[in-house]
Image (cartoon, rainbow, N blue to C red; front, side, top):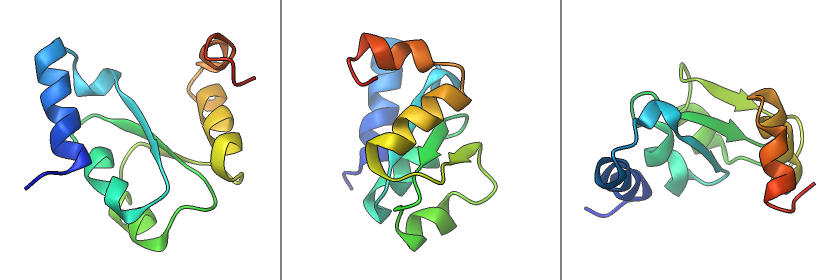
Amino acid sequence: GASKGRALAWLCSHLAVDPGEVLVVGDRGSDSSMFTLPGVRGILGDNAQPELVSATLGREIFHSKLPFAHALLDGLQHYGLAMLAGLLGID
């Protein structure tokens, strides 16, 4: 019964963070459980597997036309968090 989504839900509860304040990024089907948490926003790159794309339909997900880390930077900019990329050293 373990999944990335269940772990993220536990972490949000443990830290008293609303899932609406969480931004996730992924590219594999195994990431889908994170994207389906109520209120979570996400970033998908153009390299995302089809099953993840299907699982996120109708969700607040930014679909970048870029792959991998470039998609992350593109998504951070989309959500107005580009400054965070510099703090993480990924500019």
